Length: 321
Image 1 (cartoon, helix red, strand yellow):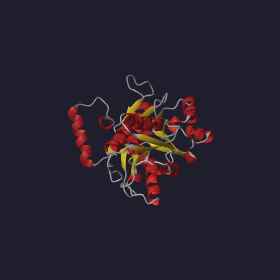
Image 2 (cartoon, helix red, strand yellow; image 1 turned 90 degrees about the vertical axis):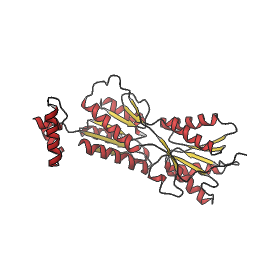
Image 3 (cartoon, rainbow, N blue to C red; image 1 turned 30 degrees about the vertical axis):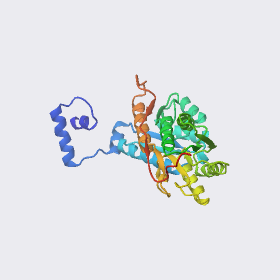
Image 4 (cartoon, one colour; image 1 turned 90 degrees about the horizontal axis):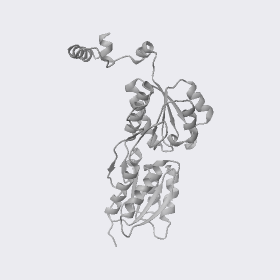
């Protein structure tokens, strides 16, 4: 019983005894058997993971963060994918709920899907949404997208760029609007800056079309800020096809800092969004909510993690006319 209390972090054990048990655990190399513990407690942590994001690089980081945290916590995961960037259908959601999951993690854009949210609310199931803003009844884990986009746009302005292109993300996600707002906020502070906006949806294909639109303009931008790395990689691809030097003739920056940012030439300057950490944090907070479903007094629904600018070789200075 004493050993069990120490392993599970419970009270009722003196400091000297706790230290002795911890020392014995280290000496023996003991690790708890998750399966055995779940049989004893009948309280296996089961979590559903819903995703439909078109960016393979983003989802790779997201799922890695979820898997790593689930392994640490001994959680069993049930994955449900929506095809083509769409939410899973009602039958698939019903089957997921019937499987006995205790809560659900939503990858963007599903954290802002009215259909998905309605089903989960009706089931009174705890949920955590990554990258979402102010979702009623959900834990939202994100970065400050507006501030991050503002800082990246300021980087371009300080390099001397005044002809600026911006590629929007999925219009159904609040993060897309926040990133555009940050871009505009920086531009408003700059005399002589001109902007061109193209719509994307966070997919590589949409980035190709948006890049063509921006570069076909009579006065094309000297710098393009894409709302994620997949679309920024598409801009670089279009620039290469047009024999434009990046960054000599066109500066390109992205957002997320996924593997897509470093698997092309030149590697992208981008906003680092800690996707793995966001996903792991969401799972941890969801596990706590499942364990204690009562209201968390004094704790905000939104958890905001830090971002940073990662500078690589896709940017260069330009002289101001």
